Length: 461
Image (tube, rainbow, N blue to C red; front, side):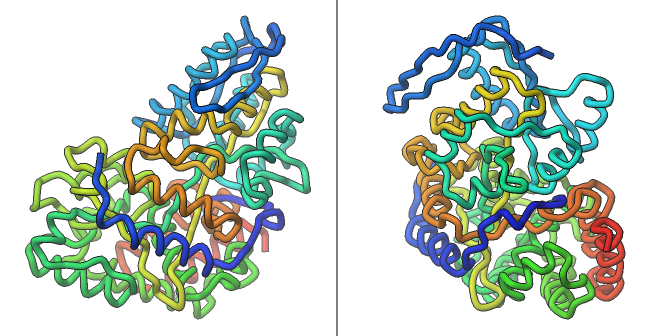
């Protein structure tokens, strides 16, 4: 969603990662069972030894108060608070979660202007990290946090958190954003099978429709899932080189490759009978509801499939469906030569340099922190030393293994790499333009022109 330092990110071939993820999922998923503080205080080191064998030394921080800002809500926020509670237990610090709004950079700007910045912010885009550095808000990570990063993360995940060679961020949370979740009972009743190509996806959609169930639930009220749809189609169809060029606005949104991707998307978005509620209904459906309406209603839900990342499991957990039995998943089908692998993530950035804030960044870089949230579901860590047994079901374990095995071979979310005004602001840029396209998928040229106009203004070229 915003401006990036993507010169610092690894750009290995998408083919290797696609093969790893597709292979891991194909082998396992269909058979899985479900189941404002000053940062001061006593900085005397104390060791923590967890039953899993991980040893992490954190300072004693009795009397320290910290604030952590993030845009997370609902179960995601509740689960992260349990991680913060463990940090409090180990250090004696008091940590307050501060709910932020999108775009988070604007939210932080108002807090900083008012003299009350949070100590740490969880930034959901590389571009936001770049902006925080450019505005001189972000503080470099200390030696302990960098050491923990080096021990637990591939070079690619470290590099995404760097600006001009300096480490500013810990990628605490990752996402595999190339997954389609489906209601297993609907597929069984329809005689539908998991598709591997876009053409097969269209066939599966028609099979489901013929059985009496609308194929797709699309959260059009939230612009960001629409950008993810586009990115998967574009990456697979146009290829990684053009994807990188478009992410940096080195080619225009009026490029024929964009026309091709939008035209492909319209094969689903443009068929009102394929989208729950039609375009008007989709544009009033928020992401959590898009998930829950796919997995409630028994074998007659409002939709059979919902596209989004591994974090969909958080919302499936709000229904009676069990991941791996009632709710299954397949990799986003390949549109071109290879299946897409698009990743996202949320990074911890220190805004108030103090022993407390640096200790929290160090903790979030450790497997100890990640394993707490992993056990709660709907979470994926890029930390290679997280015990996969911590994940609550076989589906999540396989997704996590695939992410770690992919190493540096992934493409980061394109909209997350764009300037915030274009890639990450409700009612503006990509979010709004793709909402308009969902409403009128016949106007490919018009949407291309609007995307290019908005991109040129945001990138300054």
